[in-house]
Length: 171
Image (tube, rainbow, N blue to C red; front, top):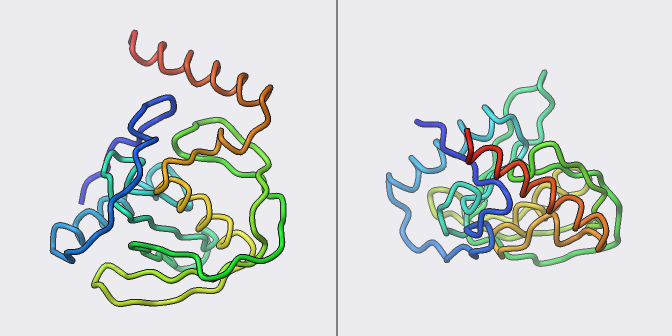
């Protein structure tokens, strides 16, 4: 297992959509392990393969409280079966360090996906799990948190992240 580098906005690779996964190999399982180690080290509750430069339809989430045992879930080639209601939730993103924003999401979802062994499953979710799934799914489509912001907030966050990238490049 290895901790991978998380891409930060405005890295253009974050806009690349993930490609469907058709082979369930030991390399895929190793990637899932790397993603889990990376997410926990960050720390975060979700991570999409596209956030570490892997253009694949794969994300992981674990919304268990820090005192509870891990509840790592792997979603490969996810598809929404149902979305109901709306709710606002303050979100952060590992690709936008230090940025928090209220985002409107579906309150209840049902998603169908494959696990790391290629076995199909379906999950119904509300609350933080539903938000995390929708957030990570967006990453697989090349949609970012900034895309859910109004024009002024979008401009401010873009400038902040641009400056952060310039400072990181000069060190």
